[in-house]
Length: 343
View 1 (cartoon, one colour):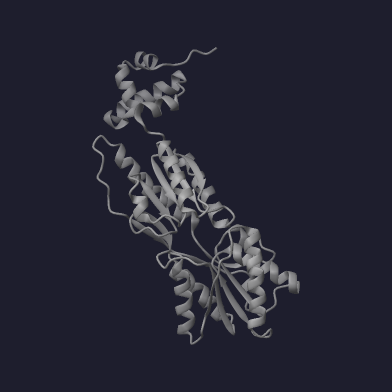
View 2: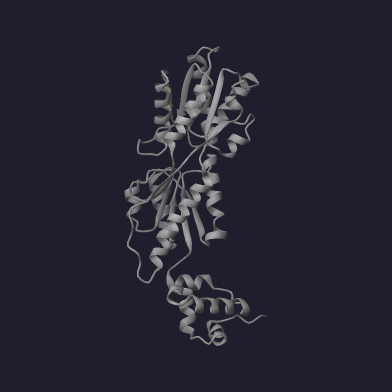
């Protein structure tokens, strides 16, 4: 069996003391870059395998980041989670993930569990706990696409996204302009989708119809609620008149499109549909769905940069003071597909 390489072996190989080798692992900034490189070379040549658990116990730094997502049945959150997890190769941080289920007591329990694991940072996509409470946990934190007045955050320009959706439906010369969403506070960034859509339609001299519904907490529940909404729309508006519908996300748009196909066997010209997110639900639908793209890769990059800046600041021998929350807003993109065809 191959002998386990110890700090003493590395010290003997490099000529440094065991204390210096320990400092390399626990406080590398205290060594010169030249000495760090010498030790790094020795570790590679000796075949040293780091004991991660011992390192955590020694310096309290776990290299773990916690993630709270509201759910995984909406494609956007599943895809954002996948992108966050793939940053390990570049950033070196590992992740502990909890689905919040939109319940405050459950999410608080999960956050305390994560803090017990000595996470170095926290990423929150769930909307449940307000940012002032999240800030009180005294851990580096970044919010993604949610209210973030008191913490660093990354959002899409939701107002512009709603505006883009409205303009695309106006170009289709619809008779009626509808928006389907759920109930949430005006402090949520997603509220901008409603405002941007509503104002743009009104400026065109039309009156939008906003449906804010309780759409459920699973794909099955969402389908039931959207089926009822589809039947209401079919009754409320004349069959021969064109309905332009902007959905809060691609999952809703895809389910609604399936309901139309089940009734008509195709997408009639009397329906024009737009989703939001540019998730796989829009690209792989029975008929590819026009969508407002959230630039997810850029959002994840910005979120990780904000979080790493906070975490690295705490690791310095003289920790940096906590800086004021930084807000990054990412531009949306209009992805035109078959559901808003002008033909």
